[in-house]
Amino acid sequence: MSELALRLLHELAEHPIALPPTQAYSSASIGKGYLRGVGVEPILKRQPSFPKEYIGYAQTAFFGGRTSVHIRKVICPVMYVDFVSMYSTINSLMSLWRFVIAREIRVVEHCKEKVEQFLRKLSPEALFEPKTWKHMTGFVKVVPNGDIFPIRSKYSAASNDWQVGTNYVYSKREDALWFSIPDVVASVLLTGRVPEVLDAFLIEPRGTLPNLTSTKLRGMVDVAPARQDFFK
Image (cartoon, rainbow, N blue to C red; front, side, top):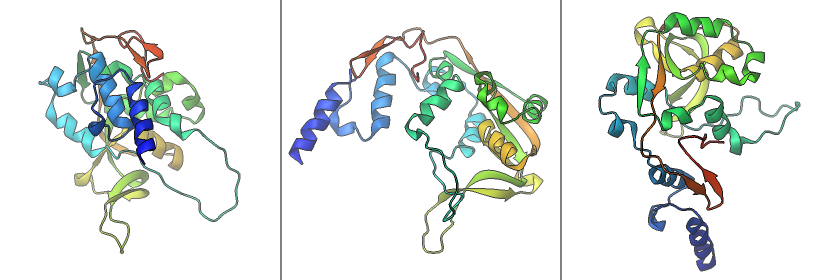
């Protein structure tokens, strides 16, 4: 056990960040340490006037990391994919680093028609075009009617835990739900139709934080956050 602790301390020391070992709870702690180190502040600290209601809409659409099995006990062709790189790949395709280093983030309200047009033109082939992903930085208010979305619920009679499942979802118009554009895209691909959209908003980065500093990932890879995509 002591040898393992020493190895972990040695690994932490390879990262040029001010993070006490007692606060290195996971790899996410390392990532946050790098963000603080290069000068990235939380959005509400750099932009206190950011409209709180849109944070609420986005939070209801946040389901975090999730895993699921849609086909069980059936022999079928499979493809091995690199899930370790999934988050960084999606972040890079959507150009999300622009938002991390933005001086401020602007909300573009009432984009219903624009988002609907994007969803209607969507195809599996379009997702192989990197430019497609840059149109997904936003959230959509929908009335699900047999559309496939992630939903947080209590699925087990033996457990009282809240879990996330991907389900056929139905809702009344007065109980419309907010989802991220990528989750709506997934539903369109799975069902072949666009859900009923009531409203949508997009977010856009404005400017760049002025005091960003360069760093070295694990002391080896140079990264200039103002010029490079950290996720790459």
